[in-house]
Length: 262
Image (tube, rainbow, N blue to C red):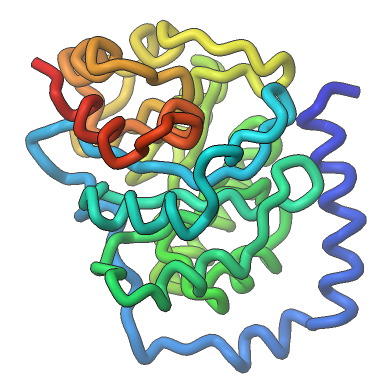
């Protein structure tokens, strides 16, 4: 059993407990539509390469990442650097995440309407309603753990709740399937979730197959302004960066450095 299978197996056990303690009917009754979600699609529809910076405590492949920078420090640096969006990993068993970090960052005094992506392993519609309840603006759906019918249904549920959706693919077979449901945002993960090996060419080899109208995000393995330049030239709209910013001594300066691409 690879790491992805282990994550999903444990997640499904946890979900049974969560559903018992907080049934979906109660979540639906407590969802607020008073304040609109902030559009991730609009935030990434620019003529430059947008940055989605990530808050991720731990990685199954690298261990503890947030040794130099805690949640408050990272969140404030990201907001002060005016990143285009912030991804918060909420999976608890392998990434030491918590969904409470989403309402937490939105309570910061300097929170500036930056869209917040809930990054998790969504395998049940319960998690989509839960995402709306905790005030996320967008969710991630991973093609390697969901079939095409689930991807379509979960996308429809998310959009009905005013949540944007990134559909994540890892290879051309997944991409071909995903394009059948006309996604608005596609994330190409350069990390093989079975082996956790990273190759930036994963994005470069697939991006030309994606329609111009679709927001294209390259995820994982982006460390330098040269990486940024290459992805921009190939037609990426945005990058999702975790490790290289999280582990830097000065995340604010690291973001400035990444933005200095040709």
